[in-house]
Image (tube, rainbow, N blue to C red; front, side):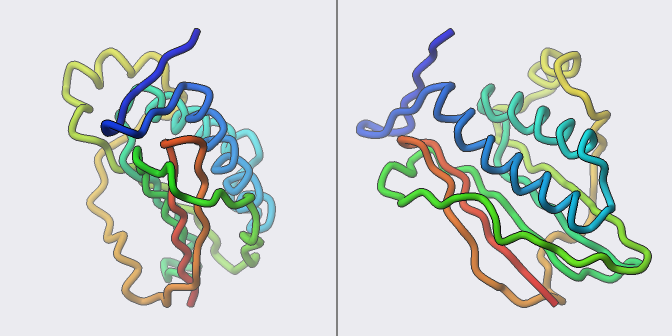
Length: 166
């Protein structure tokens, strides 16, 4: 199946572009899971699956992953969707070897695009592997320091990765 979306008059991308970008995010999630030991590889793959389903439908705005040690933020990463990323230089995944910490917990929160209406949620629900619930957690990472990032892009579809560390 081939599908093309137009983000602006000059920016287009296909489902294959979304898959290419999500593959990089999936690699980051797998590395985070492996290095922290806080998720299994299967759990990271389930999260990546849902991210891809939502991204392909145009419902994903961002993904935020935070490593907590006994409730205290230690590291975080946020992937912001951009549908006009044609001028970006794409980066490779990596640089996310996170520490093993006592009382480790990985928290993942998704931000949805305005198009993710109640009807869209009903249509998508059967395609998702995770039972997502509403979260009111603070994802500003105010207790952490910005520590760089990367750009994952394919044609006009991209996700900008922003990193924070203690």
